[in-house]
Image (cartoon, rainbow, N blue to C red; front, side, top):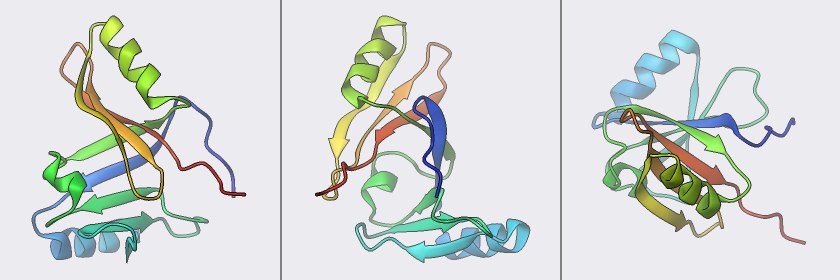
Amino acid sequence: MTVPTFNTVAWFQMGADAPEDARRFYGDLFGWRFQIDPDEDGYDLISYPGADGPSGGLAYGGSAAYADGVDDQALFLVLVEDVAAMCERTERLGGKVERPVTATGSGLRYAYVVDPAGNRFGLFTPPLPTA
């Protein structure tokens, strides 16, 4: 499995108030596969045909991502080395932090930010490997 490069779009997230319709549509259109995320209620992991692992997520219902405003829209997330530092840099460059740095139970850290033109996107750092 290849590891994405820092500062690249490495994940996407969609929200759906009708997740069964989204699964059917994107499954039929692109062949995407959906698997319930064991770490978060109301969240599916999305995999492409032939992929080593998931590349995106579908938020719905009671998931924290859906509650945080990932409603019925798509959002790209950029892999960064330090989410907090990138949030500070976003603000220095005229953007704003919409959702401050949050850590999941698995150690993933993420934040949602907005660029000066109003485009919303996410920043994330995966959990550190355990020894």
